[in-house]
Length: 575
Figure (cartoon, rainbow, N blue to C red):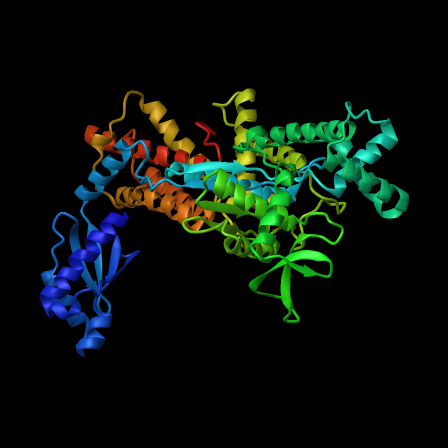
């Protein structure tokens, strides 16, 4: 569609020159989609003011000169000087045929880059909860989109698996089971973590032992490392189960945790010192990046090494930037991290650039996101006020979806099929409600809204796809995109929507806003539904119309499935 807009812009620019002279070249029209026509061009208002003539008169002169043969079959001047354009059915049909023949469905390949995406990042020895879902889902969708447009994507799951918490956890395991943690489950560890934290906060002797245990961990003590590895392995196995249930692409090989960077921290610190960037601040080694100040207006430090000699989170993040550019070869790094980390990450990026570790063409972007709220507009919690476990949320999504399926009682689905479709709908609804919200904003979690079969929801999109698949199954035989012909308003609307897929996906790859793809898919599902309700397919008036509409069904089915797939959402064949 962008190529069409470029062509229309060029043709109007040529018409302006022909009508008013070379001095007005380079004053292209503003083109926008319109409810009155396929496109509306604003070509006259600016020129009218410049030439001191009525805009409608300007529009008439331009329309008399513009050559849109083969593209547009109807041009109307509307209002004070807008030009409404209706594309030819032949052009629309030809472009739909081309998109259908393209394995990428019209999505252009971009010049490939190596893109590293840092997302999910749960903590070892703790259950994943609702607070992890946004980073996980947004990061996964962006990874899929960026891969689809041709980039080499490296997923990085930056697990929290190092530092003081592991000293207290290991010490608590030793206290309670003598070091035998082989029978623990992740839920046991969640309880263990709370107990260990309570002991650490309330028992100075335990806190001191925990700190000493951290030293043993960092120095490679065999017994301490054995227990630490057991905690890590148990947790990563559990994370893998959650990712599999969510349909998220993170694998064990994508884990690049805090401990991975630990051997690099001394080198990061010494290199910053050698570059003259480190300064002493109350006993801590810090970098003061330009432009960052406290509320009081004082320079804000990025703490690399703390007063006790330990490394701060900034040291790990700086090591991560350097590893991702120098070793992984990334030219684009995305950090899918909550909005509260905005200042910290901005300082890390600034220091990394100053140190020479983040230089063009390499750049880093904080893909920030808001919070999930409950019906009371406060942080989403259980009825008892506790943290909502992600595994429980997935269970409830599937259970609620199954109840809806059972109530609808579709005769074409047996019990096993109903359960499988319920899983797709429930998990899809959970993912879509998150991704369809502007990621920088908070949103309210509402089961009824997200599982509705109407409105901007995953079930609505999935059902539109299932309807097209049902028609294609009933038709039987091969479908040929060469049969596409465009005639009715509903066919035109569907063709235009299908042709917008490529630009939408490319736009998401650039803007990093998955909700734009959701909005596109909702619009596509809406016009697909209108097409199916107003244009008989299997009972079309003649064989040519039937073949054309089956081909349109087929392309719509593929674009809906591909678009949902880029969001990590499955598209059931039947519902």
